[in-house]
Length: 211
Image (cartoon, rainbow, N blue to C red):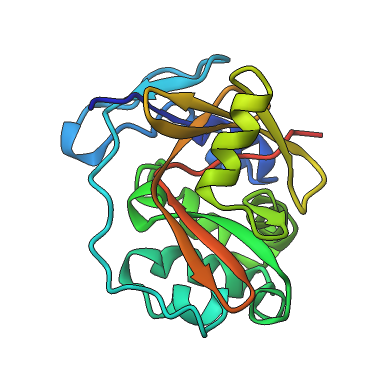
């Protein structure tokens, strides 16, 4: 099945208070395409289909979100972001939380330099907002998401720890997350039970609402 992948590098440009990133709009194309960045646009950018689901070792349900993520190779970028944001204690704590975890490939599709800028101490507040936007209180599995979507007539809303909603729909048989700007991310590996919640690996980085 072929699905579109919507990225949001230009919204990160506004989210980050760094003038040097202004020219990164529309650069979230798949690296294998090797295309020049498109001109900045106010509309979401639709690019290449998502990469195949990661082939990491199974996560241990007796370990926390942080511990399992740290032991999962395809989530190393996310773990770096969690630690830089100062949220390691939260995700090692009792929770429970459901984490929609962007893979390394998801972060890698952002424009060059955006991820490293996010990790800078000056951008910690923006990074905290970004990580919290991928967190939902409680344990929410794939079946629960599907039931909520069906009950909502094809659409459900999840309130994130950031206090902003994510819209959840189905694209063919794949659960799709959409932020307020219309950027989409797809669950490519779900229902990974944790001692303090649940992880679903997603193939895109979603961005909270801009102030």
